[in-house]
Amino acid sequence: MASNVPDLKKYRQEKQQQADQDFIELLECYNSWLKRNTNLREKVRAKHLFAELADQTVEDLEEQPWKQYFEDWFAFDYITIIGTRLFDMFVKENAKNLSPSKIQLSGLILTAVLEPFQIIDRNNNTILATPLLGDDEKRLTSVYELDATSSETSHILARTVHCGFEDRAFSPMVPLVLPEQHDIIDKWKSVSKEKEAENQRLRFMKEHGASWLTFAATRSSF
Image (cartoon, rainbow, N blue to C red; front, side, top):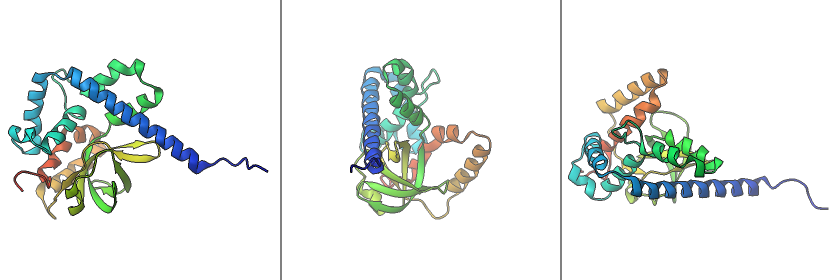
């Protein structure tokens, strides 16, 4: 007699595969839109702002991995001259052509921030980590190939989103070298708590998350 008990594991796997496919397609669609709609003056302005945040020179942003770090920040965090982010512009322009699942993912992407994590364990392209400014563990699978340097550090900077049943990192996982004590880190923790109480933490992280790149293990000054 055939069992009528649903195969929950198979169902979960299928739903996860669909969510991942929707996520990748959405990012690819956005990247295509970004190439067609990038304003050169905006990008020049963005490079100077990013270089200041990350404590790098504008010239450094022409070389990897800093070029990749900048492109990610420009795509998801940079505020244009008219006061909006490029991904927000993309969603508004293409909302009618996006499926409900991609609209939902778009909302999650809009609220994703660059955030430092402490690594607990590594397994191939997956990292078990906890936010430096929080305590909830996340198993992060990257859509990028992990930087080899990340295996040598205990902290990373990543932009994550809950996709389907799992957490995905869709920015480069930047290996960080954090000193045990540092005034900037202590200030970040203090300000983060204050912003959390004011319901302004997301905005604060969006605007200043790239500042953690001052501790990047891939800095040209290391």
